[in-house]
Image (cartoon, rainbow, N blue to C red):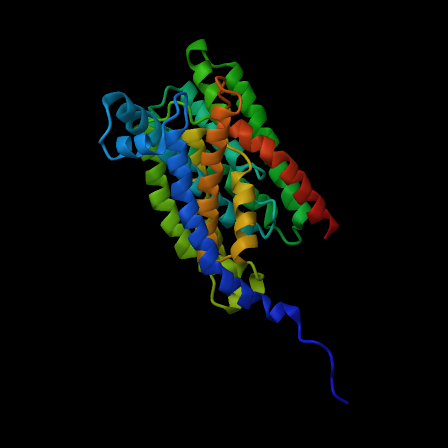
Length: 342
């Protein structure tokens, strides 16, 4: 008897993903420069496209050139680098933990970086050393999460609870540290904790770009092993992946990326959670293309949040972290509902 069952749909899906990957990456690669240029045009004084372009290339009067190249450009570059770092860090953590909620801001990594950064602000650490302090805090929080969630039988619920617990404990400590800061440093800590890109200059941009230059290539080197690791420990061992060493490397890179982003811009939520999900829906499972897409999407999200925060309630400016929190809260609830139904 002839088997009349239809061919499985799953076999066709990878082909469709491969067909739409180049187009999706091309659209993202075009959208990012457009978003950057739009951010250069928008501010307390809006510029036309011609004026912004002339100022960018150095063919404008002194005031426009100062506004674009001295004020807006370093802020936009910082936003792009911060978003890219958070998006890439989210891909690494979600893949490592095999959990859709495995992002730095949900799992306590950002909170650990925030605690270390606030302590550094209280100790009057130089701004260039602040990313190192935040990366250290992120690394300690990530290591603790790893210890709590890699025991035999650790399931998804346990991972989420451990991350929420680390997050709550770290932010309780942040509140205690902030309450004991001297008045001269309290304002800086509160502005930083809001997740703001206000008054970011080339020093901030350089700091996060250095962290991104170290972390992003390392993430691309590890992403192939990460995609194998997502299939399960037994298959990963069979494919020749050194589990312990790979996990430590992934944790270290994720901690560096999240740490420098939080140190420069403060705890900007949702980006590390949402960018990897959006990237996977566009280009498919974890790969180098997914990592690149998540980094670009993260950059777009932070740039868009900063522009929205500046213009929606102008002349009052909202921090980018507040805008992403408004967007991310319903998305997280939807994700929890969807994940719970599975």
